[in-house]
Picture 1 (cartoon, rainbow, N blue to C red):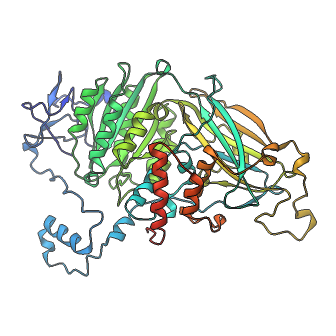
Picture 2: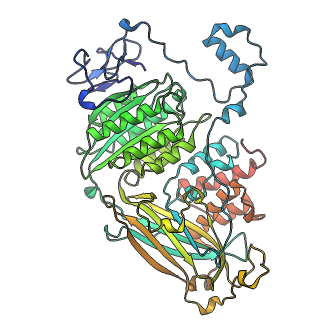
Length: 584
């Protein structure tokens, strides 16, 4: 880990810079008696190239580097993620001259192999359920949006994304829909339902469930204690990684109020505190500007230190959150997904939540990023551009930071006299057992201020032709029904806890069968949501879409206004043109 300090040029103003090497230590004992603080009071200035200042020893503050001449040099920049085999050998030879005689046959890293280092944890498309045998569907809400931005990155680069990288629920929840707002913070949701004919299957119907969270006014928002946990390892060197991290987190710094405070923890081969808590956006942005990439990746150590920092400056009744910005490529110390998950689980009970922001490509570990955000009672986003950073950390800042409900679960029970078969589109990694719904110890998704959640079910009416074949024995057959005679198509339940609560509360309501009788062609928001769902499922290879094409999806979406929706229309065209060349 390397930090460079200069007192002569006002390149970066930081009230206190401390870099800690080794396992995280209690903040009260972080500075041993023999450590020398570079700037105990007032700002210091950093300027790259003037003077090297390195950390040494557990818990020591910054010291001058010349005494430690045996410390390893910073790691070289990583090789380009799209390098061919010859470029890989040349780059390696520049770093290590002893490789000059390495045969080309040994260096077989290709662009595709480098891209294969990206890790995803996608599940197969969910199957069909017969209501007579399994009438209840239970799942955790999902307000993550990272999959959509990551899919966009692939398509813009001329590739079809891996099916495992596509989560249709995150595609749906990337966009805002016209749901009514709740009026009471103590009952923090509105619940909406509507239905339309399915554009890709004349025998089925689409049921949309829309939930909108209470939107806290600015004066109602509690103070925040944020710890920016920034990966500054060598793998973060690329322009779409650390440079984008710095500009993204700077946007959030500009939204601070005098009651808020931000600390910055970084990690490469070790972890360190770069910025003690401050409410001054200029200090935050100056500290971010000083960061440079180099070294290996001790992500577990960084997380331990970030949580310790958040605990030391905990705001009772406020928002206490770690915001981790990384490509997820941990390779020193605790590096497995299970090990990182254990750290997050251990700390979440203290009231400190976790947001993960993913960056970059080639070695991106989305599987870890998405999972630990869920475990940490937070949310996950992928930042592929300055525009996406503005959306997540500026325009949707309140939804990102201020939780209005936690452990939010949805359960719907279908009436077999009205509905014969169903499938939930997406949410495969959010499925819960039926008995988990009433179990308050089962973790589920959290919803932030003003957040929306959208879920789509594809249903087969009782008298329509379904996906499943007829069964031989009478007792196993779906009983005949008459939708006209039934008043309820389903019973919908939503369970949640308030942010500081341990016991859940319940909202329940019927879904009228009149929705099925009145279903027509989708239009407006319903048409657009249907198009987004079809887009995600098409990219996943969903066999139940039949011959529904990307061109059909584009037509279904219709004319749209606004940058994000207009961009979606362009992405359908890119997907159509690149459909024959899927990424690995």
